[in-house]
Length: 135
Image (cartoon, rainbow, N blue to C red):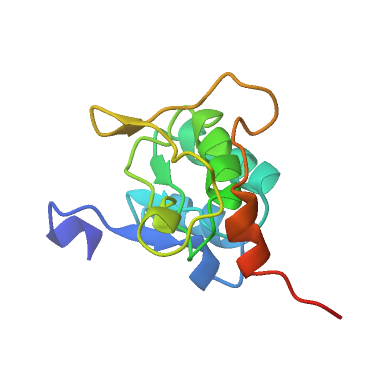
């Protein structure tokens, strides 16, 4: 299919149960031109992005509906992956629910990685209390 179209074909790693083995297979068979590496932890994301980058392939980080904290962490992981150049859908909290006191800054269509300590975000404690579960 990839040879029949100019449209990039993406492999979504979280849909492929073979993980890295599936990536290697997709690379060796030229089955895709880009990877969505939204599966696993952030260290795996960065490692897998370097695997794709070694053969000149770009990646992005897919996501679910996070509450801002994980989005900030994923933003740092994407910044650590030089070939994470496709737009990543990691800012869902801005559309749904937000636990951050201030939103992640967007400038010229790019999410800005802060140089503040840690993840560089502060929690909105009133919002956190809305999700508190008492046992």
